[in-house]
Amino acid sequence: MNNTRHPHVMGQTVVALTPTPGSARLWLFVLVVGLPLMISALSLGLAPLSHDAQPLVGDSLASTAALTLASVAALTLLLWAALAFCLRRQSLRVDAQGIEVRSTFFRTQVAIAQLQLDQARVVDLAEHTELRPLLKVRGYALPGFRSGWYRLRERRKAFVATADSRLVLWLPSTAGHGLLLDVHDPNGLLRQLRELAAHAHPR
Image (cartoon, rainbow, N blue to C red; front, side, top):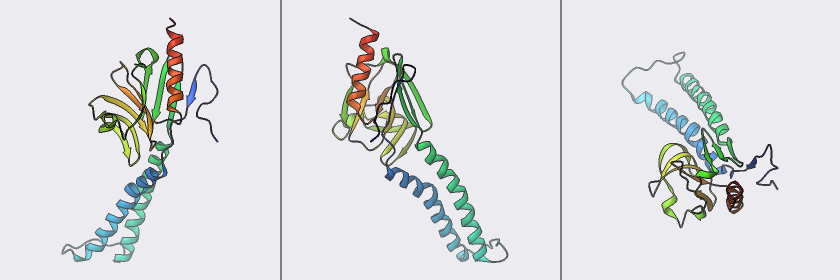
């Protein structure tokens, strides 16, 4: 079993974000590869019903269809491979200065002093619907997966990195946005952040 936390490297702790669920990867394939192929096949099938003459490869409808579908498949598979690779670009690092999150195309950093840890909590989004991502501002979304910048139902701006876990960590901050994070041990991450904050500002 993989541990969520890894050994400290140069004062940093690497915390694993919850991996992208298989259902999201399947949806990505269907939307990026399956849907364009289906639309292309449907268009080719309806082409003979059109009154407009369509240019054919070698005067053959079969050759034209095969070449068209092969081209669409090649292009969409390349796009799918690039987007699927981005789904694996997930990292979270914590040190005495703050927290850094990278998720797909997006990244944010928040200093420990900016985190409002007295208000931070582990939540079930099925119960705390006010913290659900509502409006995608600049993000990447698939069923069961959210990444990037969103407006929550309560209208606050948040950097979101969630998969399909029931519990997520909500970290409000004074940095102009909060963090909604899906990690294996959200309570453990919250404890670690509070310990770092206590060492940074001892009483």
